[in-house]
Image 1 (cartoon, helix red, strand yellow):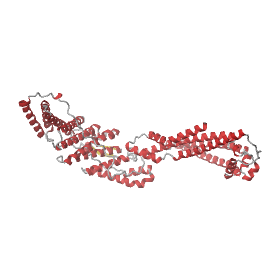
Image 2: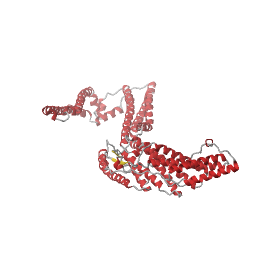
Image 3: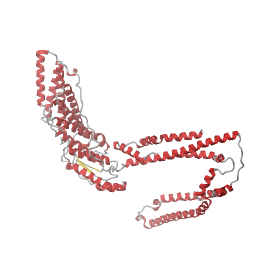
Image 4: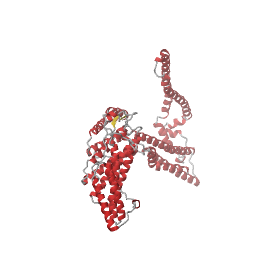
Length: 625
């Protein structure tokens, strides 16, 4: 049952590339504070790449390739190597053309995607070579062969489905979708064959071996169909396609043979003869098509002898009619071999640039912070607007001052508090000083703006003069174009100063109209008592006392409401940790750098602030009620 010939990929060859200087230059611009920390990582990446040019055809070699591939993948969103950002040109040659250096079958691309694809291709090729080097006469050899053929299939499958479709142009023929599809299913077929061989060696029942062989035939049929659609003249490709056709018939013949043995055990002699006859035909075709590339004569001879013996027994004992093969029913399938997904981690490996936050994650975090700030601004303003509306209504009713001293003999506590606040901030003298300084400050700002605009206009005039003198020789960009934004800023500040002058006038008028009240509030408590007229004590009626009690109850509720709003505002400002969302963005980014940051931001903001927003709604509603 041991097959001597197996098809393996040949690793691509490549040229050295200068990565250190471009990476350092980019990090200096994008992550200036981390340049020194990242230099060791850059050296490590260069060493990883160097090792991939002399990689062993062993498990160690495959692991080296996988480490570098994972590192390139981790770097992709942090240090984007492409024509627009980090300029590094990677050159790799086609793996099928031995003389590709001279035949032109090479690709030179300034994009890490080509580098990743080439390394992953070599990972698949080396994995297939590891599989083919195993001793299929041993149990461990069969297990390792099946394992690495499936790993190779997974690598070529990932290339076909994820990496190559992102390329604008296929740099080398071996990276075409059709070639990768053929390689993937070819490796899967060989893995299935190894699993079949082990089942036979383990003396499993014919019901199992026939299904395993049938699925192996299916895989080889798919491989032959895919590979036949690709033309790679002068390479091993055509030979592989021919072997796949022979293997298709070989495995199909084995499936029919074992199903024939099942029929014999079930005393279904007609089906047994039909199966053995078909098996003999398929295996005879395989012998011709294989042209000695793998051993199948022995099993074909065994099947021929079994067919002759069964025919003889039927002629002398059973006398059953040979069943039409189409009426025998399809043989079951057991497609055990599957492409192994490329590992996303290797023991002992860690991203050497793990401290760098990917650029797209940074952008997503910035957008999240903007959405968060907008939400907080809106909700806090809703609270403040509601509180301002409440205070306005209270002021109109002279509350809570009207409830503080009903005897008319004492100064209300709120008035004492406001007077203390005015004195703490400097009182009347401070306000006078500020009003005296305003004209000087305004004049100084106007002078600065006027001198700046004059310098800009003078420079433009000088530029026009020189342009007129030298004509076409004066190649400098026109000053009026360069200064356009500056002049717009100047107009903006002139408008601000004009508005400030008008605002100063309004504030001065308010100061003068409220001068006497500000003067009183600027006095200390003893002077304040003498400045405020005393009200006569009044006794309240029963209804009046009830009204006062009700108002005081309302004021207590309002005080509690305001305290709750202050607490809500603090919770809004302290929530929504950006570090937490960066971790979530980074986790999604490892799965796909095209993650939907808006959806995640919305979900996170709702989770963080949803209950607080509901509390704001309830607070405003309770005020209205």
